[in-house]
Image (cartoon, rainbow, N blue to C red; front, side, top):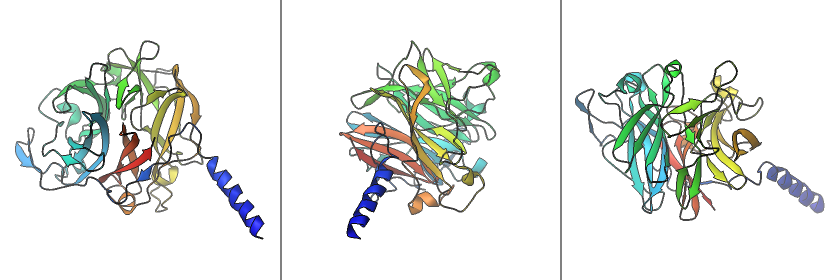
Length: 357
């Protein structure tokens, strides 16, 4: 009986191991003693240039952060919503800095926000959402973000030399036919240079995965003007689709920036299953994260895909919030020989998980 039990346990362990492919990043451990690392506060104020009044710009929710390592510190660029109830709150981007990757000191004013500029018609009243950061060879930061006018989400680009002062570069997809295209979540392909993730060309072009239904692909010569890879009908060509009867059966959406490794282009992606669409109370119907590996010479070619999710909501602050049952991953850094994964929880707070390299 004892021998049979041991054999059964070994068989079970073997089955469990088959779900973790060799190319995937190792287990991420949620930092329970510190999470959530950032929450909404009603003590920071901002003189909004459009409303012409002082508001509590991050009093409702903070979530969906991106991250970079700069001068030996982790900088977190995160989405924050006010409580003015304009399309459930206008979003702006705040900045926080940490010396250990876990304890952050936030700035009191947002660094990126809707203003009375050429982007106002796209960014207001919904705001500037869901940042993703990469660097260029010469140290410039390229930001992909979502502009939301209250009806349509549009993927946009901005640039900065210091993460503080930003230049808005306009819509990512500037062709007139794409002006009203619903587009989000731009993950630019990079190479890892020390603790930096630097945008790099493949076959003479920069490439970016984007989308929040299927994953699509776009290319660029300059990181600001992007051309969508289209199918024969002239529509965006799906590169990665949801899978029936799996954790990603409803939608797939880009996570942090993709980066090139020896075995291919690695991308973490967010997803939801069809149960979430039906607003089921089952905790298994949720936003979870998976991993993808593409051919490093052909960003459209999938080499492998995780058999199941590696990250799911299971903490109280992940299960209940503005949107229940959500972990949404947007920030990944390699800092002090560890991987730090930053994510939004239930569209309400920010948390971190760590994996040893």
